[in-house]
Each structure stands twice: as C-alpha cells, then as structure tokens.
Length: 445
Image (cartoon, rainbow, N blue to C red; front, side, top):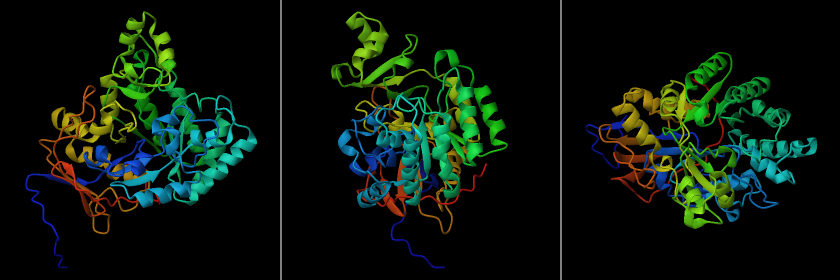
C-alpha cells in the first residue's frame, strides 16, 4: 500500500505512544466552555472521562440551587443540559480538542428528583432517577458514578444504589464510585462496591484509590490485597493520581490540625485563597474547625495521603491513571496540568517504579479496555490516530502547589483523531475531539 504523508515529523530519539486517556476528570463543562482543553492536551491526553464522583453536567435541572460538590463543575449557569442527549449534542457542537466519554452522576440524578439530599430516596424518586439513567445509556453514556462520601449522597442506601445500577448490565455500562469512605472504614466501603457490582453483574471502577487521613496511613498493601482477591472473581478496576494530596470542596469532616490544608477559594472570604487553614485560624484567633465553618463554601487541597501508600497503589499493574483535576478551581491542584508527565518523568524515569511500556499501558490500553473505548488505546491499523510524541528523557511536570497552572515539558506533538492538536509545546488551534459512545468492554488484565 502506497501512502503519501501530508506532513512529516522528525521523531528521532523520541517515543510515540497512543494518546493518554484520563480516566478520572471533572472536565464536564470545560470541554464545552474552553474546548481547546490546554491543561489536558499539553500533557498528551487525547481522551477524558467525565461525570465522575456522582457529579455530571447532565442530565441536570437545578431546582433548589447548586448542591455541593456539583459546584466543582462550574457555576449554575453552566448546567444547561436537562437531558443527556442535550449534553452529547453540545459536546459535538463544541468539538473540543480531546475526545469525551461521559458517566452519569448519581448526585446529579438525586438533585433532579429530590427536595433535599440528606435523606434516602423513596421508591418514586428512585424510579424517576432510573428512567433518566436509562435515557442517558440509550444516548451512549458509559455508566453510572457515585460520590457516596459526600453529604449530598451519603444518605443514599445500598438499596437505592442497587436499583440505579440494574439498567447497567443489559446496556453494558460500568459503575464508578468515589467510595463511601477512604479513611478508617475503607474496607467496608470497598465491600459495599464489590457486592453491588456482583449483585448487578456490572464492572466496578474505584475512583482515585487512596488511604486518606493520617490515622489510615500504611494500609495500601492491605487495600490492594482486598482488591486483588475481589478481581479474581469479578471485574474490578481503579485509578490513582501521582500526588500525596487530594483536592475538593472544604469538608468539615476532613479538618485535622495535623494535616496541611490549603484554601483554594472561599465565597465569603475570597481574600483567604492561597493561605493554609492553620494560617487563617491563627489570624482569626480561632480553632481550624471554626475557621473552616466561616470559609464555607470553599475549596481545599488536603495533604492527607502517605507518599508510600500512593506509590504502592500507583505501581500496581491494575492501576490506571486519572488526574481528578478541577478546572474551575482558581488555584487548582497541580494534578490538573501535571499528572501524566509526572508519572512518566518522576515515577517511571527517575524512580523506576515501573518500565516505560508499563507506564504507557496504564494510560492507554488498560483504560480503553476498562471503559469500552472502541479502537482506542493502541497504535494499530484500523484504530483512531490518537497519538502523543514525547521525549522520554525530558518529559516532566512543571506545575507545583504554588504555581499550578504550568504546561509540562517534553511533549513534542499530540494528534487527536489524526489532527495535530498540540506541537512545539503550544496548541495548534485545530480541534477534532469526538463524543465517544459506549461500546463493548474486553476487561484485559
């Protein structure tokens, strides 16, 4: 076969890989509002999975304001998609620089049909939620996500979650969960997720796996052993970000004076953004918990993860890479801009936690199989040309906790569906991302 190339790129000494798949994002509205998606395309990410942690941009009808943590996805004006099909159409019209696969958020569904979220749903509300989920599945949603640790979903019973999961098996959907607990009762939370997946015959993805809280440090090996036993008999997967700190809204239950907590935004006290909770409490001459109450609603970065625990989880062969970045945070965690180059530079090249082929598999082939992304995750004839060219000796993250919005070094070129979308460490202005409809999973180990 004779093929003449329109453009040629000198790749001598460089590494060509399939485009990276960010398995855990909150880019739901960003792919429409800022379709150039520079924080992701500059890392070599060509596909994002949105709708995680129980929060999604669709289907949403705001009845009583914007509940926490749906505010992580933007302000109320960004929730314009009462039907999932509306969201699909908006993504297709925006044609972002990256491909988009979407989950439906359990909290979003609760918001649509409940007068308050601090209670279990009744049978009529569950049925209304299930009908909306079914509509979304018919329009290509990848599955359902929950954020059971958050106050807006914590009151949901196992019965409520099981009822919503039932349409997933026939549709070939997945269940992704921000566990009910990532601290002392993490094993109970894992077993709850396993039992739900087993009962409904649905694959389970555990979101941003971690052992959070100082009193929970050192348990990663135990947690991984439980996961390995479970995945011997059912389809279980998980993702992890390469940082010993998390970020979300400011949660009073996570305030621990032993933990460094940095405030990234505060509605009543915007002047405190960038200060630690300890600094603010000292300035106000009050306890950190009282200071946190005064700051709410607010966002925070929690340095509450053990580096050793994170490394054990990151290095496990079944671990996928997900950034969990928050694009609407004015002072975002550096994972938004640096996750994938950090894995390749710090943990692969420098610390040799895994080989380069293994690192790439965690970012490409493995998530493509887990999420049923047909003809993606590999460079093969007949596959979509999502590719990233990078310098394995130079690739590194430059985003830090003090300067978090900084493009990574070493990404030479990124193609999305065959279109050069990023090159010479700058965007090209060309966008060819697609909405990715659900297809079959193979669940390769």
